[in-house]
Image (cartoon, rainbow, N blue to C red; front, side, top):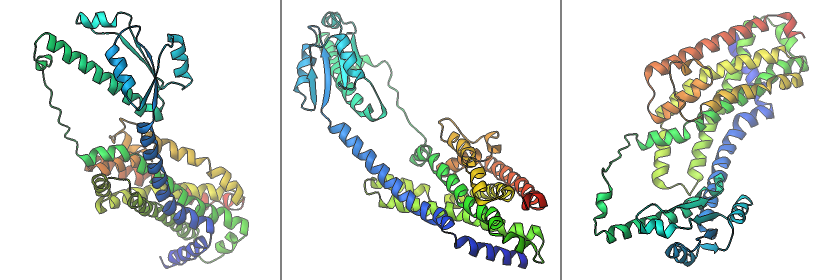
Length: 396
């Protein structure tokens, strides 16, 4: 153990002298999270405010019908009504984003309503994500008009409006606010933690194997009276440590970022901080530890095999895609931790983290995730030791 500690200390000092390692391990996660949260929240709030305050341009074709709707629409200060457009012209303007909406009433709309039948109205729109708010504003206006017509019908028939509802369903969502919030953001957070784990391990792994080859210091280390396994474990420990530090610092950066966003309502801020309670953070870090061991062993194996620092970078960089894909799958709706997904590396961490943050994780499935990660980590470390013991790989 003393030999491993000595090598670990030596490699850690070398790694901390490398600017790229410090940047990826500390600076990027600590600065990136607050910046991402502040910029994204400010942009979302700004875009939503613009969409709510925007004067909407609405095309209207009543064909002599719905005069009350027409007058009501024209009286709205936040709407600009454009009439006398043909159906083709209105559709063309919608497609070109020159109109926010185009409303067409059927030629016999008034007759349909007078005979107590549904009146035909066609609502044309072109919804992109940023225009969803504008569409909802106009939809609410149409819903209010429909409610006015319905009220008028019941008054003519001298009926109570309550008879329209044959049943009244009282919906009770038993999911706690914490569970709903965790479902919304719980997939995104582990995605970032996993990426930072990988990035934090990547540069030290490249430097401590391929970098030492290039500098010619690996041969000197191999001539010392130390077994190769002890040398590998010393290097391996540094790579795992930097990966875990990167993940831990990213959590600190996220906490700082949440605190810096002034626009978050106090109730929502309280819920977000309750998700990041100490127990949840410790559980998430305990999941990331075997995953980081898995990453470190693979990264060191590839770096040992490479001839130079540049070659190691070109081999390892595509690995980012391999890491991103399963982590991204964890973001998809409907994905949850099961006995099957608990065995899939990276995806299991993403789904387990989501369940931990929501407080819905079951001990059996969580144990399955730990066991599978430990097995994968052990196998990858065994493979790394085999590669490090081969002269052909070290002296390529």
